[in-house]
Image (cartoon, rainbow, N blue to C red; front, side, top):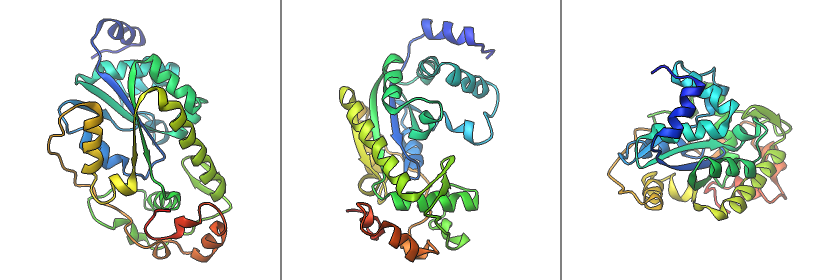
Length: 271
């Protein structure tokens, strides 16, 4: 298909679109396995993190390269176009908060864009234990691989050091506690802003960690589609006690001690 910016606009104006749903998260929260399951439902067309290619070496080519340009030039137009290409009852995509931030779009403004592009539903996926999210990101960056069909694959590289004064993940280097505070603000903003939408709250610890099909069935119910039986080969990469993953464990404990995030040092990952 020979696509141009003008032909995209013409197609949007003439074609029937799928209903739209967007899922917000911070990464390393089970989003990939959930998206893998959702994409296998015949009523759902799901695109995993359409903004992510900007951070991982560019678009693969053809339609993807054009869609990258469209999303940057006009996020509203690009998101509308993706709904048209869904060809199912629902088109969905997931996005990290910093993907919007790096385009100078606030969380609340992103919701406004979704509304203008005709998206009707919002899913908020939270991993309550931010410390485990950080550890998982650092391990993934070190091994240059984020997902695996092998349980516990992440431990093969040994322990990692968490530089509490400035950890480089998600495209920037900021202190550990400052990062946690930023994530708290992001989730507060999306929870407040999504009240006007049909919205669903999921968390990794209850809905994905033991069995991601729990989250899958909740999303299907939320969208009003039949939860046909699906499966995924993806496995947890770091299902180990935190002291076995972090080389400077005592320093991390000291950093979190006395803060509202100190409970994250516990193994169960719940307050």
